[in-house]
Length: 126
Image 1 (cartoon, rainbow, N blue to C red):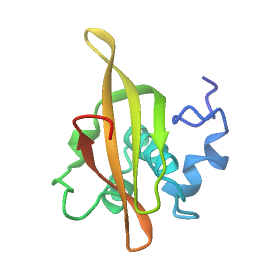
Image 2 (cartoon, rainbow, N blue to C red; image 1 turned 30 degrees about the vertical axis):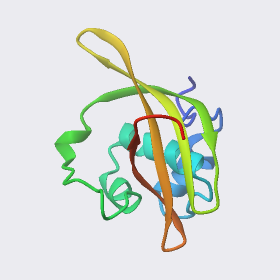
Image 3 (cartoon, one colour; image 1 turned 60 degrees about the vertical axis):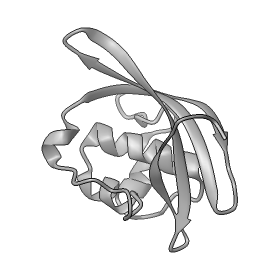
């Protein structure tokens, strides 16, 4: 991965991709774009953005110390865009003392105040 390429794996430069969202210049118009930008927020430690893009009913008390994981890459496995709710399945890779590992999640996103927000994980693909 190039140094200035976006952590979300889009292949675009960070400044022309997720940084537009993380800096507040734009807001993602799809659940997949939001999920990718949230991954970039975890990579860069952007806690305010994570809170802003989490549904208020499910947002936990996240602290800056919770963002110490070294996330390395993202793979979007599938995405289903709906009008009021959407689902994205992804694998997020990280490194720890055991080497590179991955977590996989099927995430639910909903429109809240006309913006996509992360709600939480689902057990199975709908």
